[in-house]
Image (cartoon, rainbow, N blue to C red; front, side, top):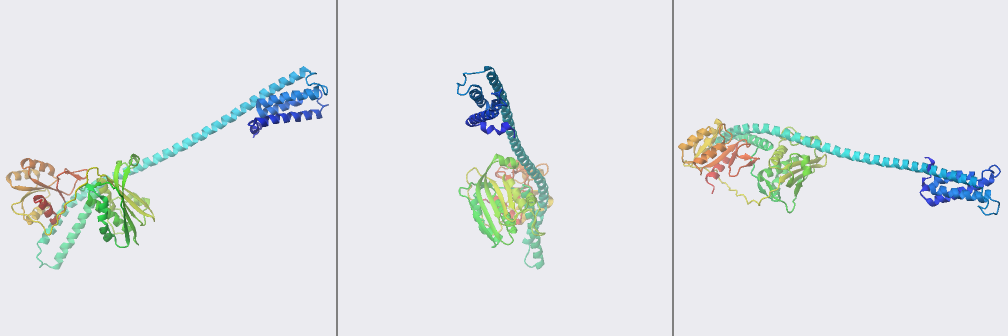
Length: 539
């Protein structure tokens, strides 16, 4: 540290600086009188160092004070005769020389101190600017890093969505072909069972039951594939989610077992959700079953509901999410949790961490497809050893509440009469043959056509036609276009659509068009009988 910097504290206190100037002048006088003979011809010389030191310590004011004080002391004690007035005997030449020299010293040292202070202050200001700049750079770097991480996360989400979309298109096409084949298998098994008279070998009945069970499981598998690929036909309406969860409590207790404690935390003032209630129940059951499997020794399952608002920032980080108001259903377990690499693949179809034969890997993918098709959002939060929370965001219903749905009970399979005429239009010969046989088995009079063109020709010859039962996906003219053409000729014609693939003319954005009645493939004889009876006899 230099002397100028070392004396900064004294310069900051003018009283100390002036006191130091006086003290130095007195010390210089004492030394000068002690070395009187040696410095006899230079009475003012001893005070010039004092002027320099005082100026250095206290700047200009202290320097001037020490110079004047030195001149007076030298004149009184060293120049004038003892006891005389101070300036009675004055030798002006050395006094003026001393004062000029002192003035020069004061000016030079004051400039030097001023320059030093300016340099120090400049260095400090520069350091502050550097510190501020470094802080701003660090903040901006952190912000850029956060933006890069958000962008990378968004890109990863987008790539995941594109991958899931590609897989969904593939699985949807596979499910469509499987549904046509299963429609033949299930329909044929139902027809075979109706022809049993009780005298068959027990193995025959057992084989039919086994085949039916296998076909049913295959139909469930294709339904899950369609759900994942967002190609199932949804019938959304206003849903009271709290009521739905409450009504499911007994079902969940039977499904999960006594070793799982079930708790429902239902929010007051919950909005109505816009969703397909049946599919929502399936989604909650799927999540509950997965939670049970993660709690092998028992645990607690919590289903919580609340209102949620996903803002623009959240939507930017999740490109597939539309900002807005949602009804949130959270399913939380106290199980083993999932590592990050499992969370990343949890919604992939056929991905499972369970042992061979213990799961299809389609439960979460079905939930994912249903929620996305409904216009919602699904998110997983999990920690190893802490459990898992899966949040389902369902779009808020902004219209009025829906009325209760009428469910008619059926004690026996409804049948028709020969006077009720049905036209079956199906381009797949085997599916058409099975459908015609099933309707005839139910007592209806049935005509069949392999194309829309052939169907229009038959309609012209059969004016008493009561129902058009048509596939949707057909070459040249699809089922919706056929129905529109048919109603130009017969406005009161009832129409029942069927398909194994819902991305078509009667389903838009996963939702059935208004007024459309759809029976999805594969269907059982009972489902066919109920749907046809419902259309022809709605009372």
